[in-house]
Amino acid sequence: MNKHIAVLAGDGIGPEITAGAVEVLRAVADRFSHTFTFEPLLMGGCAIDACGEPLPAHTVERCLSSDSVLLGAVGGPKWDTLPGDKRPEKGLLGIRKAMGLYSNIRPAKLWKALADASPLRRELVAGGVEIVVVRELTGGIYFGERGKGSDAVMGETAWDTEKYSEREIERITRIACELARRRSGRIISVDKANVLESSRLWRKTVHAYAGKYYPDVTVTDMLVDNAAMQIVKDPAQFDVLLTSNLFGDILSDEAAQVTGSIGMLASSSLGDTTCGLYEPIHGSAPDIAGRDIANPIATILAAAMMLRDSFGMQKEYAAVEHAVEETLAEGWRTADIFSEGTKQIGCREMARRIAEHI
Image (tube, rainbow, N blue to C red):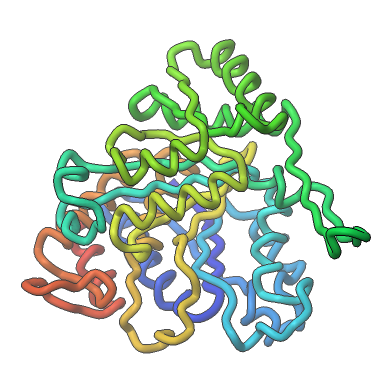
């Protein structure tokens, strides 16, 4: 199978971690007789430096022509003083919009070899934890009407509007149901239906859509404040967590912390086509850029998600996950997950060892 992959290395440690993921993908191609071609493209701060804008038109064009997109990280203090519409992060929002990506999938998995890294008591995570947060990405309060004003009594005021439509809720529900079918067949949908009108529409629409098109998937509801508590009280109860934009932003970070290291967590952004955007959830970490100490595993796992979700390569996905597990079981660690009794290695060496296990 031939696949063309656009690579947006970005800023900071982005070039190092994407290079590691590409090395692992090349190993997958060799083992399973595929042909992957990789096209480096500019986005973020590096694009600002080279082209004067965070998302050049050429990058958008080539990403849309690719089979999928692998992203490192964007941003850094070098560009912090630029206007909002010229900052590196604007490139990320722009490419998501151009590709029509409305869902963000964040698996938070606690690997057996890293069980002691979780801040939770061992008995709470002994049975394993893998929470997959399916977050709506282009609606809700982040994209609703907003404004500022002044009140004669209360002073300065500001407001942001939480707004969702049936269509927005239905399409993110479809993503969650398709994922649940490949896993446990269970979804917990998070809302605040006891207070918010938008959450009442969310709850009604999720159940109506799932019940009509995915009767084999079980959907239950949980209020967001209870969900936040349950993630630290009993994380093993969760599998697929379906959320709005705001709630998903918060809960996915909480779930990530349960696993012990943000450097291990990947994500994907998907829409109506198989062409998705795959990236680690951590930032560009400019303070360690170029020092060969970054953890490439999140980006490698993002590449594995690409194999499964965009290319339909389930065996290849499993091979990458197994390679990561074997490498960790051997005691190899980058600085962020190092502990006494393990062996510390750099970014390049970690990627090389994982590639050898493919």
